[in-house]
Each structure stands twice: as structure tokens, then as C-alpha cells.
Image (tube, rainbow, N blue to C red; front, side, top):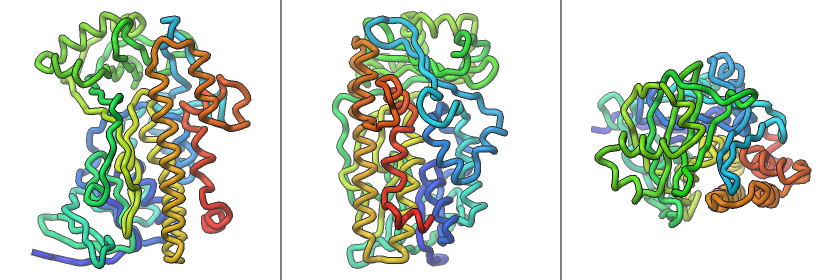
Length: 413
């Protein structure tokens, strides 16, 4: 039974980082925004290691101090066992860009901070509110039908933002996706206590270690004094063979590492092993009449560089700017959303292309630096190493997505 119909400037489907940031930025501009999130926060979500590009967005939303106060582990950079030398090397975020560190976070709490802030800024947030279908009139999406408190509701809006992640609750009705044929991976992970740390100033770094003579790599993310998230990523066919014994499969691969194995010596696994499909894809269309996608609803990039959350948060900025302009001047909608889609697609494609290059694991690290420098293509990065740091920190993408609409958007912000 239909219960209520409400009217909004924008309905955002999904309360994760991309959706919460889009909603918060639009509400900050005075727009009437409804966020529909199917889960009730806090809820579990993998993805604990952040890069510094996202801090520009948390600064704009006014939550960086809250994230700091939460006590999340500081992440000053990356430590890698990657490339032809098979040796440990590292980079620091402060080598390129304004931020000395990012954070390793528990996503349940991190996401809750962002969604709470969207509500504080004026967005209406409804949790436990799964969207069932888009509403379409005369070829244009005009809202969604959703469930909440045991009833069915309609929310109508000028624009619906699909921030529902890989489920693509709205956009899958209007756009197909293209899977990347060489990035069909699965991740297996769990959590360990009693773990060690990397030495010296690498103490808070994420560790990314390839498995020698195999396709696959591990992450090790420090989440506290002696707690670590540890995961293994490999082609889907390699993991599926061992699905009946994930722990045995995980342990066998772990023995083939050097540094991570030492960090876990004497540790204890404290949660069940989980798996997730990390198949990279890109949507054919990022927007259509009455709808637009952001975050994983637009594109999913292999987790090798921990870029996913940052990409979604950075793209929320031009999306909010563009929708704000289009709400005042509907005749500008096609232009600004084309600019949004082209800019974010270029950003996504650059990261995906680089991940593919980086997966060529027997290159010299100078090759990785040179390719990153060419993709970043920014005179601020004065050396190939700085270009690499700028790219893997997300800083290289900030200029391309911020100011996408020039002086118009700057005046409106």
C-alpha cells in the first residue's frame, strides 16, 4: 500500500562515502536532499585504508577533526614489496601534496561520521530504507519507490543520484557496464591480533606485498597497537579452486611472503575469513534524464592502490556543484553533467590504466614512477617519484575534478 509521496531537489540512493558526501555538499548549498540507505548504520564494510586525496573533501564538510578525534591509525604512506628487486621500499604522502598522512579506518564508524554530517548539514537521512525501483515519467527519472518502516513510499525529485555501490540500484536500469577482462579478482581477508609492525618511520604504512613467482598480492593494514586487517587478492580462478578451505589457501600463500609473514608471526586470527569480488568495471553512461551515478555505481577500480573511497568522495564535489547549477538553470543540466561524466571517467580511466601497468610486477620501480608522472601530468610534481606519490595519494586527481565548471561553480560554492 502506498503511504506517502514527498518532493525533493535531489534524492541520493546510498549513504556510503560517495552518497553521504554528495548529500552533505548539496545540503550545505541549501538544497532539499533525501538520502535513502538500505542498511542501518553502523554496518560492516571492508575497505579500511584511505589515501590523502579524500581529506580535501572531509575538510570541506568540516569532519576532518572528527576523524582525527576518533583515534584512527595515521597512514603516512605505503610500503611495498613490488617490482623486479623483490625488496621492501616505501613512499610518504608528504613527498607530494599538502597532507602528511591519511588514516586506516574502521569503515563502519568512518561511514557513520560522514552520513551523520550530511544530516547535520540539512539532508534528511532514512536508514533501513531499500529502494525498489526508479520512477519514470515521459522518459525521465522523477524519483524512486522505496520501503521504510514496513510501508512503501515514493520520493520525487528533480534528480536521483545513484550512490548505491556495486548494486547500481538505479543506474542498472539505464546503463550497462563493461568489465575489465584482466582485472577479475577475488579478495580473501580476515583480522589478526598480536601482530608486529614495520620498522622505523614505516610503522603506520599499509604493506602491499606481492607473492613471489605467483599472481597475487597481500595487504596488511594496521588498525591499532597490535591489530591488522590482512587480505590476499588473486585472479578469481585461483581462489575458487580453494573455496572449500579458505584458511588453508590463505595460509599457504602467506608462507610465500617475507615481510608480512614476519609481522604475523605469533599472531591470532580473530574473525572468520571473508571473500569479496573485486572485478573492475566502468558504466557506459554516468548519467541520463533525471539520474546520475557516483562512486562504485559509476566505476569500480581494483583495490591495489586503495583508491576506491577517495575516487567516490572526490567525484562527489563536481557532482554537487553541477547539480546545484542545474537546479537553478535546468537548461545547463546536459552541459554540466556531460562535464562531470567526462571528467570523472577520465579520472577513473587513468587510475585503471595505471593499475594495469602496476600489475606488471617485474618492472623496475623507476618505470612505475615514470608512468605515474605521465598520467598525473601536473607541473606541481617535479619528479617521477613525486608524480607517483601524487597519483597513488589521490592528490593528482584533485585539480581535474575540483573547479570542473570554472568560475560558475566557484561562485556558487
